[in-house]
Amino acid sequence: MKILILGAGQVGSSVAHNLSSEANDITIIDTRSDILRALQDRLDLRTVTGFASHPEVLEAAGARDADMIIAVTNSDETNMIACQVAYTLFHTPTKIARVRGVEYLGYPALFAPEALPIDVLISPEEEVTNYIQRLIEHPGALQVLDFADGRVSLVAVRAYHGGPLVGKELRHLASHMPGVQTRVAAIFRKDTAIYPDGQTVIEVDDEVFFIAARRNIRAVTSELRKLDKPYRRLIIAGGGNIGKRLAQALGPRFSVKLIEHNPVRARELAEVLDNVVVLGGDAADEELLIEENIENTDVYVAVTNDDEANILSAMLAKRLGARTVMSLINRPSYVELVQSGIIDIAISPQQVTIGALLTHVRRGDVVAVHSLRRGAAEAIEAVAHGDSKTSRVVGRMVEEINLPRGCTIGALVRGDEVIIAHRDTVIQAEDHVILFLTDKRRVNEVERLFQVSVTFL
Image 1 (tube, one colour):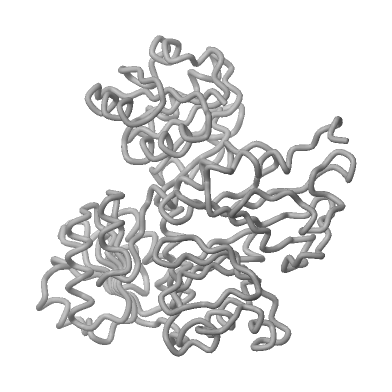
Image 2: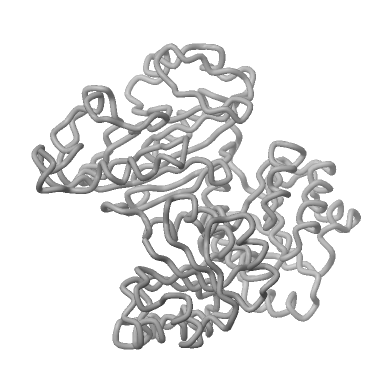
C-alpha cells in the first residue's frame, strides 16, 4: 500500500517503523527536518518537510495516488484539515486521524461523511485508558486484549513458582480444569518464543499467552500463578486526559485517589470527578504517599506526561509497599529497561495505539490487531469468507491450513459461541478467527490466507 503518515512524533514514528517493514510504500511529513533525517537513516521510507495540511505539501508527498493517509500530528485541527484536503483534492480512499480533544469527540456529527471526511478516528488516550482498565479488572495479568466485542480475550501472565501447571506439560491443562476451554497461544522464555504443544513444559518466569472466553480468564490465570485478590484501592498519579478518564471509569467501582501537582487542575478535577478523592501534590513526595496509606494500596498507576516522573514515583510507591505498580512510558528504550524490574507493568502508548491503526492497514477482512512484545508479535482477528473453492481456510481443519511458522489459531467466534481451536476444528464461513503470530515479518502470509480468490483452485 502507498501510505502517507502526517507527523513524525512518537506515534507517527512507531507507525512508520511498523509499516515500513511490511513492504509498504511509506512517506512521512513533518516540519522538523532533523527528525525526518534521523527516520530516513533508520527506515526505508521517503520524507517531505512541510505543514501536513497544506495541499502542495501533500501533493509533493504523493497524495494523488496514495491509498491511505494517517494523520497523527500533535494538532487535532491539522489532522482534521489534512483529511479534508486529502478527500476534496486527492480523493484518498482511506483517511485516519488522531483526535484527542473531548471538545471534538463529544460531537459525532462532526465526523459524518458529509461533514469532516474521516474514515477512522484514533484517540490514544481512550485506547490507553481501556487498556489500563482491563489490567485492573484482571489482577495478575500483564496484558488483556479483547476480540469479537469482548467475547474472547488474549491474556499474558508470568508463570510463578507454585502455580498448579508450572513444571507440568500443557496437555494436563484440560484435566486440571474440566469444562473450561482455553488454549495456550505462545510462550516467551527469556525473550525467546516457544511454539507450544502438548509436551511443552511451563517453567517459572515464562510469559504465557492464553486465549479464553472472558468468564474463564480468572480460572486459567490461577493455573499459572497464585491468584491475586481483586483490586480495591487505587492511586492514580497525574490528572491529565488519561488520569481523568481512568478516574471517571474506575471511581464508581473502586476506591480511587488521584494526585495532581497543578493546583488549578486539581481544583477542576475535584469539581467534576464524583467518587474520587483528588489530592494536590507531588506524586513522588514520600510523605504524601505514606500519609495516603500507600502500603495498603492495591494499584499505583503513574500516567503523567513525564516518563522520568512516572518511573521514579512508581518505583517509590513499590518500595513503600504498593502491591502492583504501573507506569506510562513513552520512550520505547525506557520500556525495555523497566519492564519486569521493580515496576510490574510498563505501558507504551504507542504499542497500545498501533493496533488500532494496523487494523485498517491489514489486507483481508481483519477486524482487530494487537501489537505484542514491543511490536515483535501480533494477535489478529480475521473473518473467514468464501467457501472451500475460493478460500484457503474455509471448510478446512486447523491442521490442514498452511500456517506460517510461529503462527497459531487460538479460537473461533461463531455468532455468540466461542470455540477454542484444536487440530480437528473446522473453520466455517464468517467465523472470526483469532490468530497469534510470534514473528510479525510473516504477517503478509497470514493476510493471504484470508483473502478470497475466485482462482484459488
